Length: 152
Image 1 (cartoon, rainbow, N blue to C red):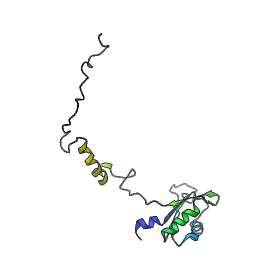
Image 2: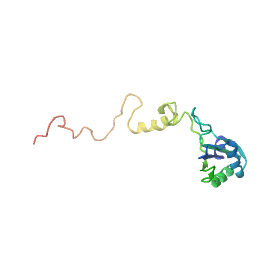
Image 3: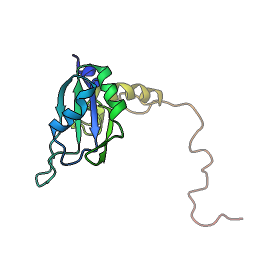
């Protein structure tokens, strides 16, 4: 199964109580289809008393099973909490977007998109700005270099 197909068959389960375990999540979602994997991410904080981060991913063998689980389990109560169940989103690449370790202009997509815009705005790739036709931006500013009130 390709990565995109795997993410389409994966369900995000949010709002889990701290007492919920991987096996409890598995037991709650098994009625909707064959489950490939259940992941309940552990807390990242070193001094945290919570056993997990409050959400889980349930991967089904079939996309239809995942949709069935979303339809039946979203907004349901599970161990005293209301669950938010939706289709899981694929994780973003570490090389793109705001969390990236690369400068935005070093990313291929940004450079390809903005290189064309720069030429439209009158910027040249070499020395400096190209000649731009239009009204003179300094027109109408005569006499503004004198301080004080205008003589009448």
